[in-house]
Image (cartoon, rainbow, N blue to C red; front, top):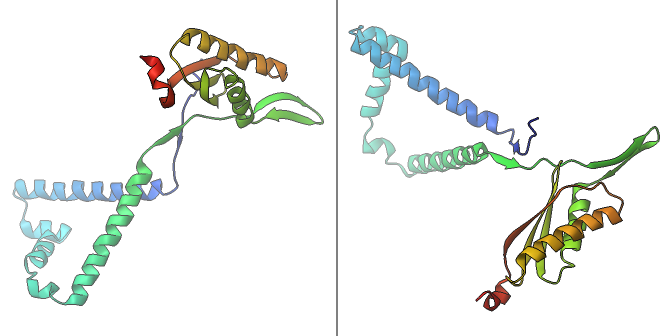
Length: 202
């Protein structure tokens, strides 16, 4: 059975960003259609009545430096440009997907009087403390998902790396059993070596 591993976290502002994209897309399609009508010899007066393209073109070509020469006008244009950059840039950032691992409380027991649950951070902290009891481990970080417990470690030496990984996994599993928690699959991953002990790697 498929199990969800990632969950996308989105902002309510995504709606406004997508609305702007739809507006621009509709405008491109609309004026693309006007271009097609002109290409098939439809009367330009008819196309202009529908889209107003000629009025807009004439207004833009009629602009002169004198029209934007006043300092107040330039300040307004600059302010609008900066505001548009900030707003559109912020909406674009909100469009970037931000996936995250789903986190759920671990339910231990439930009856008519209530339920006993363990928060994910408690399990992760337990795993980190157990992993750091190995003298070769300098840093440890736990991550609990719904089906397993992943522990990433940084070690101080490269020697006996397989034994270090195996011992760390056993320590974490034993810590779960010692605290009467359900036994979860424990995955131990090496993420790096402590920089203060690089000379031991040579």
